[in-house]
Length: 566
Image (tube, rainbow, N blue to C red):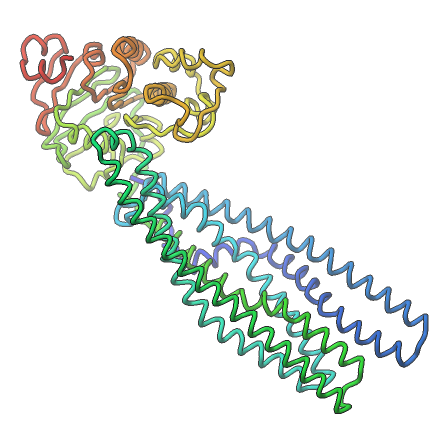
């Protein structure tokens, strides 16, 4: 279930148009300032030519002083227009990249529809690199226009000296852009493939980091490493291919620009030798021939950046256009309601049916781990209601009729491998900073010893994925976060698998006490948690086969006793 906006799909070009439309004002201001910069740069060799012309003719100190003042004005204009123009454009670029990062992250947290087949690592790459490269279009267009201004000013100035020089610059520019536009298409297609392969490699390494401990446990780390090395090698090969294409593009652009500059210089020299242009015009032509290489280089690079931005926008569209896993509802569950699973059939679940009353603490002993995982996925909305048979009700309302915001405010499913983020203990327990039961959650999860170990207490730094915490500390931190959320309905899956037996006993009693009066479902094989539950449901072969208290089941059900006794 998602809360995707009811808007028409956004293909890559539409994303670029949206970015341009949202930044029209900034781009207009940046274009004017960068146009002034390029015009000032172009005016410099023109002014030098005029100075040479008038100095040789008038030989006046006054004319020389005016010329120096004019050069000072040009230099000041060039300096200030560049500084403020780039400041405006880069601010707009950064702001637009932030907007797309937030949009992609929002869609990625829904989660992304399954038919896109993107892993979290790929979504992360799209939300960072692709968002930044898409936003680069904000700078590309003004720089393209300002470079065009420089080329046109240079063409007009050379054309006034001799029409052949102006025509040569225009024709040469058109020829260069034609050649480079063809080459840029190859770069665009190669960049799309490169980004996809890098994203897959990032997703693979993220999976390996998460599963490194169990991989070591059964000796699968070498096979996993070989799998990652293959994916990484493919990404490297594609990156080399794109780098080679970029090198060829840059080399071709530089060579063609140099050829055009040389052609303008030689033509101007020949015209001066023939007496058809003056010495001042020759100085101007030679200066413009040298200067024009910069805007031409910038102008010729723009097709490449446009293709890269378009490739990144099309990858963002994979996430932004992903259809919702189901059509979202708009209802809200009743306050204080329970949880009901009615004849659900999905994966290992076969006509699963049970009810947890409001305020009840129920434990599920799942004999097959696959069934436990499938049940947690259904309750956590990772499986859309339309993808399984049966109905799940929260607070008396079908999940399909509820909005995701309402469900997540009312129901929290905490996985056994909850993610730990870089920050502090406090920000991991209470990310929004609005929780009112942080202290109680820390005590209930037995995280107090971790807090007491460090002078900073709850402000103790935590590395990404909890790298500076043990497995048990990470699990207790995740449990504390779930308890601090204080939702009406809380579902925990194997919350104590990484802690010792004594700590597990204390956590079980604390959780039962803290959640008293709140609806709680624990999917576990822990005797401690099973013992504090009001009822235990035995989930075997996808259905509930027994129901009673933990102690009664131990006394009457031999299979249950073998499954949970330690």
